[in-house]
Length: 286
Image (tube, rainbow, N blue to C red; front, side):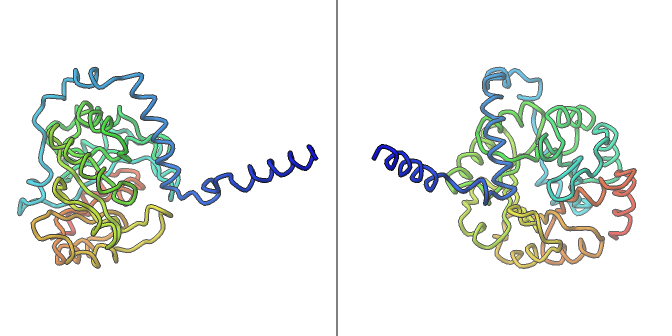
């Protein structure tokens, strides 16, 4: 009898084990790792220390106002060394040289990846980009899951943060957006489909971004999502298209659908000279 009881209990344990490890999406893995990183960072650098940053009291650069300018290219050029879908893109790229070149080539804003494990970025990348480019809007591109990261973004010199509707609840979107505004940061809310747009509160969203790439599997290679959602985004919101943009003709089509900004990374970063690639791209927009 004891042997049977032990076997039965063991069976119960096995069948009750969570199966998420088998079914986890790339986004699940990124966020799971992010939770560990954030808890560690909170211990190593409390909010009180972040508030001592030289950037904490600075007045930010507005990407919203930049994108509304009739002379703006609308290109938000991204600095990233690798991605889950493409692997290494430009692993040895220098953030100072690249972002300074982006600014000189006509970028309306610059996105800097700060996730290290999956994208090869770091807080030092954002801080360096800020030091080199004091007058251009900088987006901290990361997976925000905690208010603490918003304090980090402010302390590292960002002008706006990214909130991803695919992972966040409506309550978190509101909470994080409100905190960002309290700290003087703009908010880019990213959606991928109609469901995410409908569920997301937009009160604190300064910019609505449509990610053409599905973050659950990092698939798709077109701008269909942006074209599909263009008329569903409230007219008072600045809207940008993200990912899967590789030609000036695509930008022109998106402009006709009301998009003011175009977040592009891989298209420039995969070249030997990302700034030159951006300059050539911009020259074909007119």
